[in-house]
Length: 236
Length: 236
Image (cartoon, rainbow over all chains, first blue to last red; front, side, top):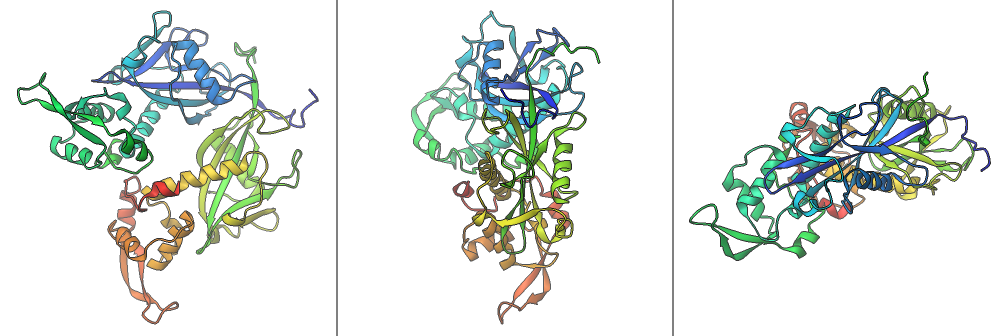
């Protein structure tokens, strides 16, 4: 290759870090690994690695996540670049963070014992290396922002679900309790759900009706501004 | 410096590109420069340059914008990283785009003839180099998203303004016409404005009342989800 006109310019290491939130039907969790190389070997970390010459950032994020956890086919979204000069003590490294929210049960076979990835309750996550704690904090904020407006959480529910299950999902994402009556009314007003005939009686005699997602409306409303969460700014 | 443990890893050029939208009281515009170096010298471009060893991406964005246009003190927000392999034909370069929306009149003294920056009507912008057209398109989408929810546009208005001026501002950002009565009702329902006694009679005999921003409420509502724009997803 001919010498580039840019060859005098500074070249930097560029890393990708993957922030994977998961929901297991009850709790929000965060996927972490023990870092396998120096510096900070054996410390808890997001799934990270370096961009290569022949791949885009999106491709690097998928490759790195797969190499370190076995996860494939996850919808990863670019989140933010972090560029503090000393964020990696070894050498100046700019990192582009990616994030995803997945149904833990759908992917549990992929994350096998072959890998050393573990799910942590968000409230009980260990201290992470470098600026990864800050990345997680900002990514959670971004997730709450998006979930307050758009129907992005419903993919995490089983095909048939009850209103209490729906409420548990939102309460775990926002780490709060929502008023039951207001929450139900707000959700139902979106008309995204179809009431089924059967009831789940496992938690009460009266039982809770099953619902399913109205897939057609759900597709139409993916981008709509729906305001699922009252005063969502409180949770950011 | 000791040899880094990472030294075998690929190092890349990292650029910053600044997307500056402006409002002049009537139209939305985009600030562009003629690129000063090869490749693509003398072609219209966003304000771009390379990250240096001793600066963060935020610092690089401010430095580059100032060097190329004279602009200082603009609130630049990190937008998105672009990493297609061939986006710069000279050498593989990852670019982190930044964006801002400014009041053109407040900054017109800074952008002096010493620089070669020019404002273009969004509808009449020239073809830009590399993937800059795509960057602008996605940034405009992000701006419309944010302005639909949060009171970020009011900084662009004079201290005293009329409802027609407010409507012009929103119509220029969304490149559309809003129904006058619905738009007014929606905006007034946010209670962010204080009606003044005087009227602007320059456009009609009846005149239009002047308003000012309720600064206290405005500060409180900066993060609130307000839905200023009906069916905002249409404009994304």
